[in-house]
Amino acid sequence: MPSLRRLTQCFLLLIGILCLSACGHPAASSQAAHRTTITFWHGMTADHQTALTQLVNRFNRSQTRYRVVPVSQGNFGTLQQKITVAAKSDTLPTIAQTTYTNVPNYVQGHLVVPLDAYLGKRPFQDVVPVFRQSISYRGKSYAFPFSKSARILFYNRDLLKQQNVALPATWAALHQDGKRLKSQHIKALALDQSFLTELNDLTYQAGTPLITRGPRANLNTKQTRAATHVLWDMLQDRTATTAGNAGYGSTQFFAGKTLFYSGSSAAIPVMQASAPKGFHWGTTVEPRYHGRQGTSVSGNDIVLFKSASPAQRRGAAAFLHFLLQKKQTLQWAEKTGYLPLTTSACQDSRYQRYLARHPNARAAVRSLDFGFQDRAFQGYPQYFTAINQSLDRLTTTQTSPEQALPQLQQQVNAILRENRGA
Image 1 (cartoon, rainbow, N blue to C red):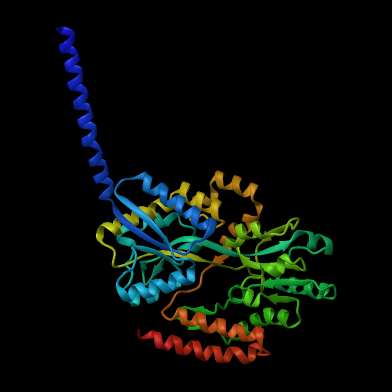
Image 2 (image 1 turned 90 degrees about the vertical axis):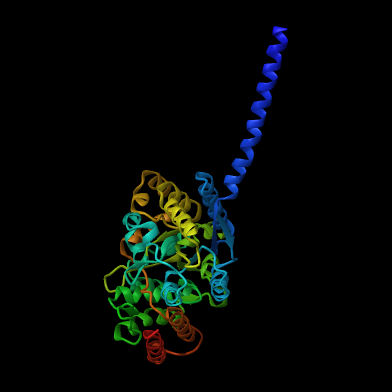
C-alpha cells in the first residue's frame, strides 16, 4: 500500500507539471503575439538585403517587446515612388530608407517626425562627423544615418604598372595621364552615366559648393565653369568616358582599357563579384583640385513617419539604438561594404583587422576626414533632376559649360524661389 500511495502521488505530481507546462505555452505565444510591429521599407537587394535581414533577426531575438518586419521595395527608385503613393493613401510604414535630401519635402508634407524625443542627442555624439551633417533639418533630427558610402577611385593595378602610371594626386595629373596614353587607346577615367558627384567634389574643392546656405545656387560662377571644364574637357578629348545608358562606368573599367573608374565605395562587393578572372584592381581617394581634398559622401538614411503609433515610435527608436551599437554597425560594414556609422567603430581593433584583410575598403574610410554631404533644402528633388538633365546635354551634345550653366542657374533659381515660400 505505501508503494501504491507513492506511485499515485508521483502520478498526480506529473499531471500537475504537465498542466503547468501546457499553461505556460499559451502565455509565451500570447507575449509574442502582442509584440509591437515595426514595418521597415527598404531598397536593399541581393547580399545587402541578406545582411539587413540578419540584423533585423538579431534585433528581434534580442528582446520581446517589438518585432521589426523588413519589406523590400525592389530598389531605391521604386522605394521612393511607393513612399509617395503611400503618403497619399495613408499607408506609410513605421520607418523607411530614404535619402536625407528628401527630408525637407517630407517635413513640409507633415510626413515625418523628429527623432529627438525618442533617441535624444547622446546617441549621435559618436556618429562619424560627416554623417551628422545629414541628421538635422531646422534644428531637429529627422534622418538616421544607415547605408553610407564615399566616392573613391578604382584603379587597374596591372595597367598602371604596365604603363608606369602613379596614383594621381590631382585632377590635372589624371588628365595628363590620359593624354599621354591616348595613342594607345587607353582612357584615363570611366564615369557613371552622370558626373554630378565628381562635379560636386570639384566645386567643393574649389571652395564654391553648387548649393550654399540660403539655399543659394552657384551654378554659373567662374569657379563652377572651371570645375565643369575639368570633366567636360576630358570627355571632349576622349581621355574620359561616361557609362551612358549602361548606368555605371565599371563596365568600361573591366574592359581593361581604362586606368581609373570613379564610383561609390558601396560598389566594392559588386566589383569583387563582377571582376573578370585575373583582373587586379585597387582603390584610392579622389584627386585634389586647387590643392584641396573633398569627397562626396552619399547613401541612405532612415526616417520615422508621423503615422506611427507611440508604441511603434518607441520600437523604432529601440531598433535605431541597436543599429548604432558597435557590434551591429561593424557587422553591417563588413557584410555590405558600407561604412561604420560611428567613430569608435571605425577605430575599433576588429575593424582595423578587417581593413588589413580588405585593403580596398581603406580609401572610403580615409575619405571621411575630408568628406561632405549636399545641403538639403525644399525643392532638392527638382534641382537634382534639373542638374542631371543639364549634365546629360553636356555629355551627349556639343553643348559647352558656357552654354549650359547660365540656363541651369536660371532654372534652379526658379526652383528655389518656388519652394522658398512653401
